[in-house]
Each structure stands twice: as structure tokens, then as C-alpha cells.
Amino acid sequence: MCNRGRFIHLLLNKEAGVSGNPVPSIIFWGRCLKMYKYKVIATIVEIRGDGKCSYGHKVGDSFEFGQFTPGGLCQFAYDSLRSAVAALLYGGYFPWAADSEVTTWACPDPDRPVIFELKRVAVAD
Image (cartoon, rainbow, N blue to C red):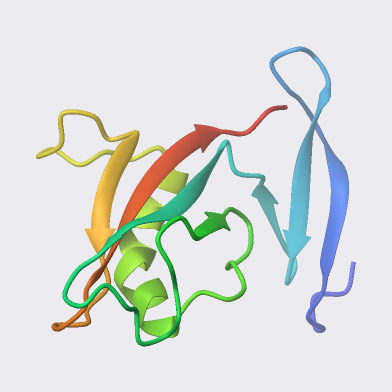
């Protein structure tokens, strides 16, 4: 296996999964990573201020986080969601939240903050 180039290989890991089937894995820059058990769906539920996002997002727009960064999402919104999404992707929780499966986060726009609902969803095997 070449680990000098930027590449991704999908393969079946030799270790057995829960059902005895091989576990899908990714070889990324020479490292073997298990695929995520969760994905996170970020849905815009509110735009405060005058109700218009300066990037053009609208209430109801939805973005899926998993192995890759979703396209079309404002960079500033992505930066504000990134840590929360990472925690949810890896099964983490927020001690202040009654339910960490669904939580809300906002973009940093002080005049028209876009409010996102982050929902953790189990990935089917």
C-alpha cells in the first residue's frame, strides 16, 4: 500500500463485525479508519434578525455530515458547527442537554444568526 499520495481505498477489514461479517474500513493516507456509526443532519430551523442569511441559506436547508464535509454550506457556519458535529459523529454528548441526539447551534453572524438543528442518526450497516 502506498501512503505517499492522497487517496482513499474502501476495503473490508479482516476483523469480524458483530454479525461475523467483515467491517468496512477506509485506508486514508495509509491509516485504517472504521467508518462512522453515526451521521449528523444539520437543518436550518430559524434565521433571526431580518430573516435573511447573508450567504443565501433558507429555513429548511439541510446538510449531511459524515465522512466528508457537506458542499454548499457557508464556511463560517461550518466553522461554528464543526466541534459539535464531531462530538455527535463520535457518539459524544453534551452534559447540559437533556437529549444529545438533537441539539441546536448558531452561526456567528451577530445581526442575522442562522439557527441549525443538529440531529445524530445511526448509520445502517
